[in-house]
Length: 513
Ligand code: SIN
Image (cartoon, rainbow, N blue to C red; front, side, top):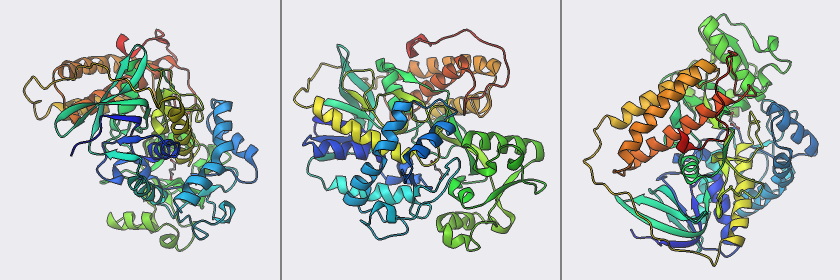
């Protein structure tokens, strides 16, 4: 299948942020191309989102305060204002009016306040719109269908963006690998919406393709990357075969955490107990598993008809023969990157004509720890802002520049190459750059990852394949996370548990490693 080589707006990624950016740009009469690795909606993290989408209620001030409190005081006030002030408008416009998402509690296209609001940790009030606990797929699938039938939007799926095309400090699009050939796509403006970095860790709630592609490409092109040390671990993932996320909404409805001896431990740790900020609950679950051997989520205090309240989760538990009466075994797992490509409230990066939105972007709204159910909202708010802004500045100025595409000159990679390198990357990240970190461990991890990056780079100089470039991107992100963690004092989900300091590397670029 052939596709255009030029577009006003190029969006890379097809989760909620990419979709919102594409819709906003198309509404401004821009031609839009979405390049995505996805072949199924479930290849995007959005499709996996359970809890829902937090929306400002009657008290915007309390929403602001909850975000800042959860962020360990590190959230940027102007970003928090942008999120809170745009929440109702963007949800009403895109999700309720345009897509008619069937949120629980009222008919489609009802007034926003008519829908049921759920509660999750660190929210002082009920403000989360949901479709049972499968909210993400109920949003993403209609969104994709809407865009697929839009005259101004072209989808290029099963395609991987490799490198940003840059010339004299401006981004002009990207090279794309599809059907074993590399093509340059030129754009007036480029919007990265490529999601998170779950592939860097042994256990993650992300889909497999979360290899940090946009962050790595932006870093290699010289964009500012920030706050990479803030990797959020979700406290309650099922740790057995075929792991899955147990939504915080279950704790929001009363479920409690018990250790191997059946005792609740969160009330001794935080006044909000199981509804404390996520980083605190995650560390406590990890510590209690180490101390007593296991932690279970006791769902008995929830609605006696748990299966009616949480049908998707009940199915997952049944599929794995989990006895709900005994509680669901849980452990922390990598969940969300709060840092990423630094952007302003328009989604603008530090590079000309380059924007970013969604998990790959560091908007500043999450500070050191993200408040539950704000990621879909952030994707919508920043996706829409980036699409609007990019289509104002990017159209009518598309430059084709001479580029050299990487060529497959060497024999195929040894079969085990990618798997072996991932094993080393994930083992290093899980051991030294996980829920608690030491400066000594981070320094050693940094050396290991530098060597790994060198080994991978040696292959990407002469070979092109999707698994190889994904590995390159994940390795770069692992190194960026480790380096940032090595430099930064503890806050939120970045916790250093020894005191030895190491040489500062603030201000270095990825080329320095
Ligand atoms: C969850 O349902 O617990 C995840 C929600 C989120 O990550 O915001």
